[in-house]
Image 1 (cartoon, helix red, strand yellow):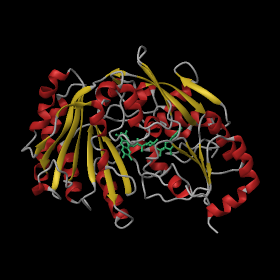
Image 2 (image 1 turned 90 degrees about the vertical axis):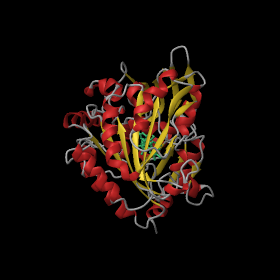
Image 3 (image 1 turned 180 degrees about the vertical axis):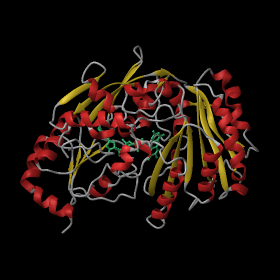
Image 4 (image 1 turned 135 degrees about the vertical axis):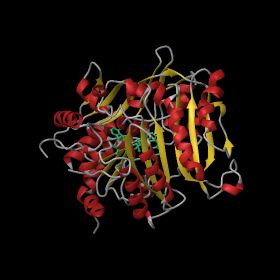
Length: 469
Ligand SMILES: Cc1cc2nc3c(=O)[nH]c(=O)nc-3n(C[C@H](O)[C@H](O)[C@H](O)COP(=O)(O)OP(=O)(O)OC[C@H]3O[C@@H](n4cnc5c(N)ncnc54)[C@H](O)[C@@H]3O)c2cc1C
């Protein structure tokens, strides 16, 4: 008998029937027709069988779910957009609190604020806020959930102009391990508010996020330019110079990968190494062509797709490249300079790429993100101008472990003491979590954990262990 069957049986029909009467959302067990769909997450590398999936309809369901997990001693997984790379939003034999149906969004254009429920995706929030020409730093891929994304930090095409997503957080509604609903903000439970901005899902279930908004678009100057892979070294050297001179309203990233068979690329390069430089200028539109030109002159251009486009189009541009249902492992390393040694290390990894799906992303950070005082949020790595995200992907389990090893080697090559980013990390060992925070930030996170979740109910995450464990 599997753990799931044992737990489902142990829950018993009477217990489940009692729960079903007290919640409004669906309860799915392994015998339900929708169970297989409901248990799957974006990253197919994690195929787990929860004992129970609760599709929450609101805060009341979330409170009951938290109480149920405690009373039945069930491992508890939280799900927003379901894009966790290490698979934290599912669990063998436990309870999944699935908030994906909670997508209520209210924009207040006069105050430039939005309140979004925790099941919203970036596509949902971008769509509502852009109706008023407003936005905040959102995901590069619109199918990603706002919940896990915000709680880990949040890097997107507005990061240098508006900071991380968590820097725009004004307040959060949180159901804590004891089943209370708290509002965390600069004035209410400020310690919890501090921890939520970078400390991940360790402290409770966030049911709604309130964010500050900025005037953005609706047209921006954005896109991608493609260069031949054999010029990667010269391109990275020139990219370093372009980044040093980049204004805050320009956020960019390089992707060293293999050319997909896309119609906008000539057939002659399909399947060959390629360097894509992507980015967004969100300043005055008339300046867009000039401001993005340095990025479009890094080498011999294959295709230049930069130009004026709707903000919403840029926010969904690369969605098709990140499909659900294949095996994924990410690993990251922050670094201060794209110096010769680091370029050499990245190129070694590029040449050793195990398959055509693997990618090496270098995001240019700094700007507004770097001006937020490091101690003011749990996301504390603000003095590093770049992050490397090594993306290892395979269609299925074959070759996945070797691809993950490649990603580990790629990020190790950046520097032994490089900090990691919790949202771009495919595993969850205690060492990885410690490597994601400076020691004083980690200690402070433990103190907040001790206060709000001393028994570690919320442990399926980049876990901050409470002192008692
Ligand atoms: C295709 C893709 C593109 C990405 N692009 C970017 C990017 O551009 N920038 C970036 O910074 N990151 C990016 N990421 C990483 C992303 O930020 C994380 O994977 C994030 O955790 C996804 O959030 P989610 O809500 O979709 O995930 P979920 O799997 O639903 O949740 C992940 C974890 O977040 C916590 N959590 C979720 N909901 C709640 C809640 N309501 N309350 C408390 N904790 C909760 C839990 O610990 C949960 O295990 C990307 C990931 C993918 C797969």
